[in-house]
Length: 487
Figure 1 (cartoon, helix red, strand yellow):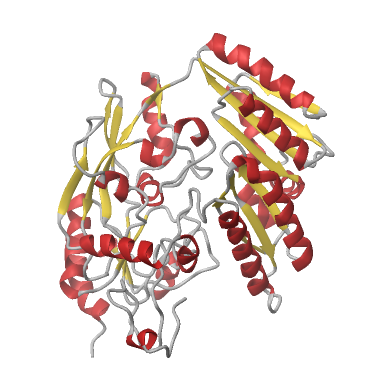
Figure 2 (spheres, rainbow, N blue to C red; figure 1 turned 60 degrees about the vertical axis):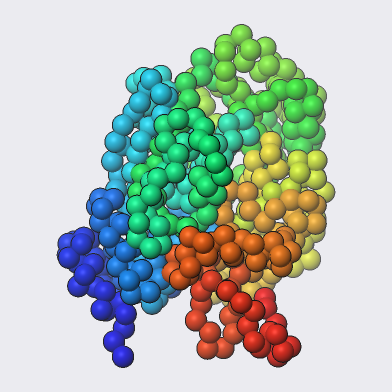
């Protein structure tokens, strides 16, 4: 029987041209994982559409043949949400990088999904505007990927996540239809399908065009880096700042291990001897920022900061952010492999959860570095391991899963901004009841009844011997008679 992907390939070439279709095995390996290289699979074929029409037609061909497809932006995702299907089509939006409109009167921009996040701000800056969501990878990550994962960033404490900045989306449904949700208007009547699409991880379709909200560039931005001799002291400073009624645009914390990695990689020059550093940034009208900034610096010193460094111009600010922005990639300097985890807890639970993560690390012998958005309780534990050592990968995965369990136990979530993807799909039942999961499955099936849009992502799929991965529609007979269990 011919491979369905092989059958599709001539039609895909007719749609996207030879340069837009990759079948060579070596070149396909370029796309075998996203930023979470812990999961990898070679795609059946890679397609790079150049226009919305090519993207929609590609999806339509997949639908006609019942072949699964996986969307991929810049490949910076950290939950294996863009993990390819080896029997399917990987649709990469990296050639769709046009900023179609900067509409200052309506304070929005219309862009293609492959546009890099930071490029929107660069295009809007001459008009005194910027795009607020800022993942650490904002120089390269794509807007379409940000929409799929509902990505965040350091400044989401004050400005919210991607979902709060998307006004409209045009997208290809899993049947290959082009539809629109929202637009330039601030609000639309009816059910919030746009809100459901943002963060759906490519399971409801692929964006071909995104309309995003632009913010006015703040009059004043001030940043302080505070160094502490313990994580607890840094945590006290965070609580004091929030309790004082100050809403910073960002509150970020790094522990000693992550500082060590950043120093090794980029020589960020953080204060020697720091067991924790806190970066607090304020923005807004100058009188307000100046008044609150002085209070923030005083609160940090009261909590035990032994050194503070302030920045009020872009160059000084870039030096302070240098270590934090490079922290994830810097882990490669101190560990052969690592898992970037992403969980959320209520801010008040941070001290207890961080102490327990330290205990898990000590008990297992697996090092864990912590870099996180302290203001909103969004943790990013970096679980370090040597993948050449027998059993190390499994131990790291076990610690990683235990950290997510901690987040759930403390009233948090298994993801804050990286999505669920493949990495955490099997942990969804730990957060949601069977009825909750079934409801989400039915919602997904309303968009994708054939189960071909990014299968095996976001929701758990029963994997029994001989069963084809896809959207579960009914309980498996072996589960019904007690012969097998779901995981």
